[in-house]
Length: 164
Image (tube, rainbow, N blue to C red; front, side, top):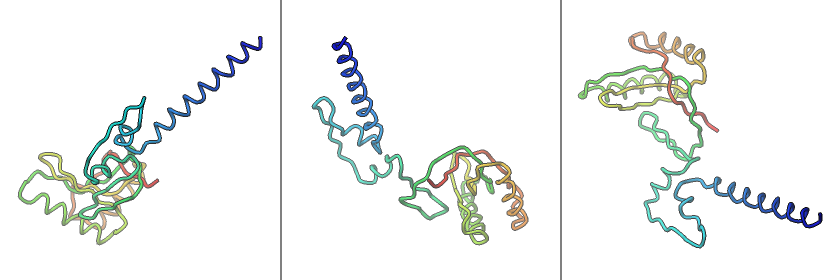
């Protein structure tokens, strides 16, 4: 009986140690750190540019907001809504027009995030990070009253960035 109890305690401790070890592996902040961890006496050495380390990090993000860059800002990405202000496929003027409209919106509402993206062949300008359609729609009404010349504004589903 004592031997069974002893084996049970040893098995329980072994399971606990293994689960703690696996939790330690999950705590790595990038795939590079995961690969460089010593496993069974073997070590992988990776040599790369420091910019690549920043790109591969899980918790750190770089957000392009109409020409400016926010570095070292923690955020999470979730499904939500943005307002699409502009979309065009004219290769000669679409990028400039998207930047001009982003600057106009930033002049009226500096706190509103603007995202200019290129998905071939379209340049798009989307603004805001809204969790609900209603929240995005209220901002859309404000923007339509401030910019009646922007006829194509509408709420679209998108992956948004929220600060942690």
